[in-house]
Each structure stands twice: as C-alpha cells, then as structure tokens.
Image (cartoon, rainbow, N blue to C red; front, side, top):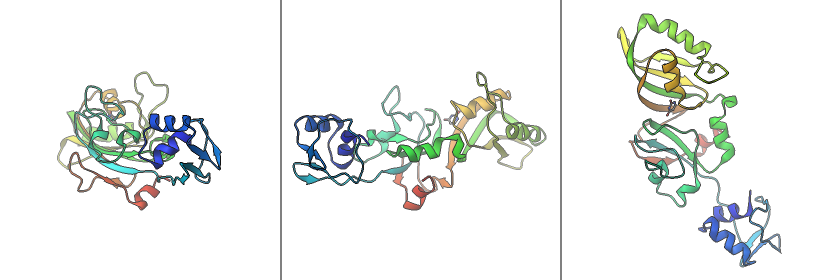
Length: 237
Ligand code: URA
C-alpha cells in the first residue's frame, strides 16, 4: 500500500494532511525519513510519526440498505451518495462493492479492501446476486418456461459481444400471472437486470437487491447499515 494511504488508514489524517506531514520529514519508515507519499509499504514495516509507531487499522466492511434516489458513488452528483448514510470516520475513503442504480434499492456492501470487493464483483468468482424485479408486462406461468430457459442460456444484450452468464429466473407467486420475479445473476454489467428484461421485450419498473452470496439485509430497514461480522467478511476472502 502507498505510504500516504497507510498513514490515513492508521490515523485521523486526511490524504493531503498525510502528504504535508511527509514533506515536513516527520515520518520514518524502518528508521529512515520517508518523504515520498507513493512509497510502497506493508504491515511489517515500522512506520513512525514523531517517534510513535503506527498500527494499521484493519480494513472495514459494512452492509447498507440503500434507499431510492441515492447513488453508489464517492461523490454526491444529482443525488447524495450512499456513503453519507454511514456514520463512520472517513466514510468517503470507502468504496461500494457492486453498484446499484439511483432508483434501485437494497443490499449494498461497502469496504476499503479492494481485493475483497474484487471477489464480490468479479464474474470469475461467480458470486450470486439476487434481485427482486417488478415488471411492466406480467409473465404467465406458461410463458415463463421459455423465458427461464432463455435466461439460463444467456441473453444477448445490446452492444455486447458475449451472452450474459447463466441466470436463474423464478416467479414469486404461484398465481397464473406474475409481474414480480426473482433473478439471480453472477455478473454486474452496466444496468444488467434492466437490459436483460429489455432484451426480452419487457421493462423493469422496480428493482431491489435482496442478497449477495449468502448475505441478506434481514432486519436492516431502509437507510440502515451495520458492520459485517468476521464470518460474513470471510465469505469473500
Ligand atoms: N441491474 C440493473 O439494471 N440495475 C441495478 O441497479 C443493478 C443491477
């Protein structure tokens, strides 16, 4: 990790404050004055400020119940970022492991551990994301059989060169006609769920992420967040 990042992670300092401190020559790495913010360091290095050794704060992991009209971004742009909901130190140093659209609600994972979020997001890791989808055109049980097969085989999205990976489509109620379904996917292409239904002539009118891997919102109400437990974090290590 970069030295300035390490300092931020283990102190209250912002990145620019850390850089100033480095410039002033008050930081030592293994006994030597270090001034380069981009210097690569790891936890075994002895990093001192004013003679005090820093201990790196471990990475942070949260789940949040995203509400509509918020965005999964590190800046507020049109709508407020979901990071505003986290009542934690330096929330905007965190990032979102798998973004949702502004109008999509549900489970969002937030961390500062890039490797961990890669494991959540990368299609190669095949982590399942389950979405509850409300559709403009209801699906009849009869039609659903062909549709389920299409989603299993892969959907050709506009402008994409490869089919979507196998997805699991399930009707929610056992009535004859249903406009609420569950869709399980293992990728996160741009607007993927909306585009998959558009590709089969339907339209998503509501979208809510229920689950990522085995993680569920359970009793988190809209706008609420909590730390992940060690076991929950371990699922994506
Ligand atoms: N697919 C979408 O189309 N939107 C989301 O927010 C998530 C998945």
